[in-house]
Structure formats: structure tokens, C-alpha cells
View 1 (tube, rainbow, N blue to C red):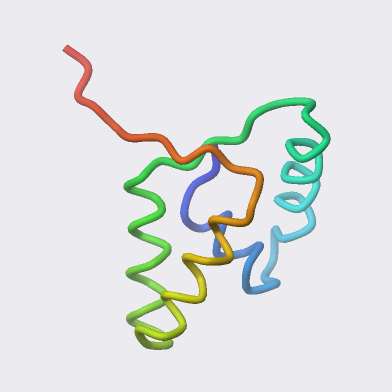
View 2 (tube, rainbow, N blue to C red):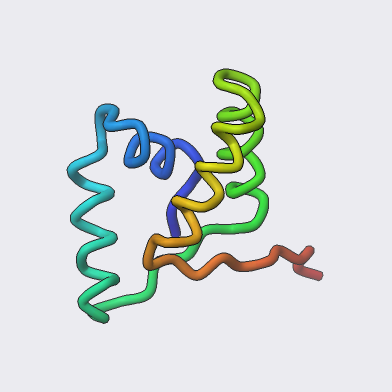
Length: 78
């Protein structure tokens, strides 16, 4: 499970990017599944839009959709 900061680090080439790249490469090779919650995706898009604008957020969404991630919903455990 990746969080928003891991995804942003990967997309923006920040510290931690090599580790995230390794995890994604492993997922692409079908060694395991990598998840991103819908809430964390929202955080990625919110941060991108706030810092760089709506067009950049839309590009980021397209980039995330190309990654070997499974985006999962969230629910309240009872």
C-alpha cells in the first residue's frame, strides 16, 4: 500500500523515488500487487492542484492511472 507522499515522491523525482520505483517494478513483474487508496489518490491530486494547478493535477491523474497500482476504496471497519 502506497501513501500519497510515496506517489508524489515517485512522480516528482523526490527523495524516496528509487524505493517506490523498485516497488512498482516488482508489481509490474507481477511479483505482488501494490495498492493506493482512493483517499490517498485524492490527496495526491489535491496537493498537485494546490501547488501547480488544475492542468497539472489532470496530468498527474493520467500518470497515476498508468502505474501498476490497484486503486481501492475505503470503508469503515465495524
